[in-house]
Image (cartoon, rainbow, N blue to C red; front, side, top):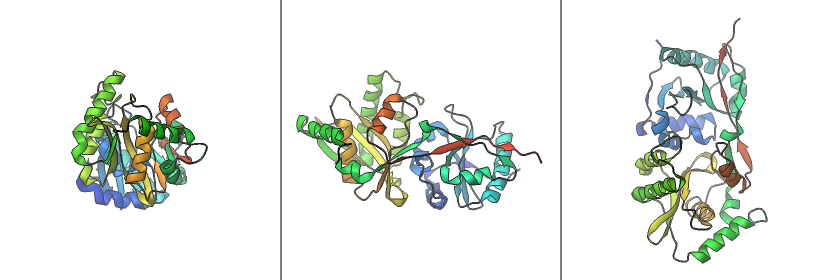
Length: 307
């Protein structure tokens, strides 16, 4: 038996989790505590704190294969190698093949220099985070963003009765109504976790006040027509986890994007708007804001070295 005692991730784990997230030096959105909580309806993350690291495993929830997320904490290749030998025992006991996901580019050399494992690291552009200059998105200045600026100005002129407000946990039901309407307009079942993020947004709102979340909402005719929610992470990076809007209101996506960054994240230096999942329309939308760079993620299926 191993010394790893896994349990379901919960709010009680937050302080210790975020300690190791900071020590890891990563800025990947998938590994933030807020992201793990929101996606728990799918991944049912289990966590173990071992040898000054945070280890997270999941059966994949039918969304992907069983996996270990990149360990959080400060470690070298020797320490990681010893940890993976223990984790491999856990995977073997559950009938899983060892797979590691969400490996930060800064850790790839450690994974490549393990004593007992060979790690061929696979990079996926679809899973990489889009990172932007926060001030550019707040002000929408310059030729590159002039179309976005025009969209916002047109929205303000066209809907003078629109109202922006900071988001609170009390806005949960109103926001979820908007998500359900959005799903219905796309012919998507809100409870289909492969097609809809309804359950993930619901899970995040359940812990809104415990997670230091920030967000904003646009109301028109006393009903939520757009909202955006995220948190301020290390190094003044704004992580935007979810953004929804009613596309019937021209320019509303550009408006909620700018309003939230100006009102809720005035001190942010960077904005992480997560991945595009290879969805053409989503990729086009994220590229239209001209990211500074993509924060790359890697995955691997470690193989034993035979000496």
